[in-house]
Length: 313
Image (tube, rainbow, N blue to C red; front, side, top):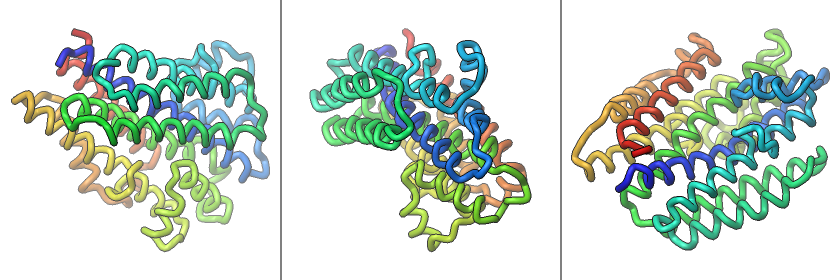
């Protein structure tokens, strides 16, 4: 398979996943701001920091306000990580590899682009946000569903899945990191009702509220929630689950191509860390520090995949 075809599929699904997860990050910030009695515009700083666009935001805005941050994250074309930018990039990559996609996958992608282009054509009111975020998640899910239900399980499928789960792991770690940056007003509130409500809202923002209650009997504890989103291999948005899928799909490609690359060793090492680490070790190290290190290693893997499979050849 040509490197540019692998590149197009990989990035198509990274961008679709990113669009959904940026919406989830905004949702996390919105939910958390509603739980704080001293909620103000500064609360949105953590959302920008976790998305990695704080400095870019400052380049085009003289001050930080909640409505401006939401607009920047959802529909600003100058922000390459906004939902609308990601949908544009995802569709452009889909067009580039159109002949490698089933009709169902292309139509779901194109319909997503059409709907969101209209939905995000103007600045949103606060009351419209929950519905818009739900539409973004729904449309992204339809693309994944169409792809999963209609594509051959070959290297095309593998590269798309690797892109999906590298992006998902990155964004789950960023959503969890919002908690560190902005959602807890002071260390004195750790374990308080405010703290618990905020952690519950994090679960809701990643569609994990009910599944968490099945796994942990509904008791909202910071350590359990961090364990669920980082180390629980049964949770489909967790870091551990994402790396099981990354390693398995890289393994299928290695078998088809008859070679192992540095990316395989990097992915194996990250999966081993997630399999052997205990959540107490994560919390003792510092949740923020652990997540920062994870994002760095995840980015390294993405670069190694791009180089090893000659995405731009």
